[in-house]
Amino acid sequence: MLGCQNAGADVVLRNTGSAFVVTSTLTTPFSGTKSLFVADVDEDGDLDLFRGAISGAITLAINDGLGAFTLAPTRLPTSTAFSPVLIPGDFDRDGDVDVLIGEFFTPTALLVNRHRDLRPGQPVIGQTWNVEVWSEPGYATLHHTARLAIALAPHPQPVNVPGLGELWLDLGSGYVFFEGVVLAGLGRHTFSLPLPPLPTLIGLPLHLQALSEQARAPARFTAHFAVIVQ
Image 1 (spheres, rainbow, N blue to C red):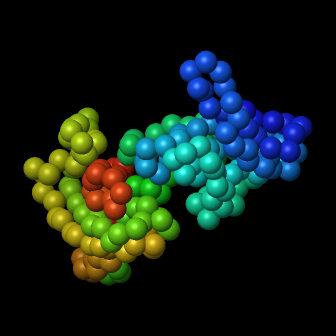
Image 2: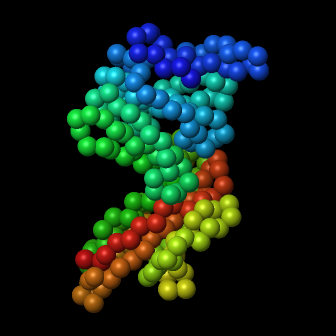
């Protein structure tokens, strides 16, 4: 992939084994491309494209598997920075690619990939505790299962479960288990958990992790979160 600062299009070059040839182009954002990287952000087996423009716009283009890229503005939040530098990495250790945005004049920002994501919410006694599990948001082709576990303690170090990722919850400490369905096209399921109005629960630490059985990929664990009941 060749990013251009002063030209009308970035260029995709294919290696034929003896030379590189242009296979497709993608219009550059206003003022040209400052930084870019490729990664399989939707885990469909091909490399997708993140670009940061000199003007500050950050864009994602999805690969069709043949080297043609289509912009996917609905998959990114509105985010701009001055001449951003984009750094890929699995920052929440859930097995997918997140993006760190560094630039000159504003704080560094992190874009978390919701391809497989857990949002724990805040548990408060006497109220309904909403916990969200996200999976293939906006592009799931089939309904699929999300499983949520809440435990009293984590392992000191995660247990690597082959094919599923890192299990942080110490299930021997005591846990509860819930199951829900992620609807195709919606990309999330909300577990609504009523908490009893018991003052003895205040200050109780809880540890959460989910297992997402995605429509187009094997099941994997989300990241682990810890919350305190208020």
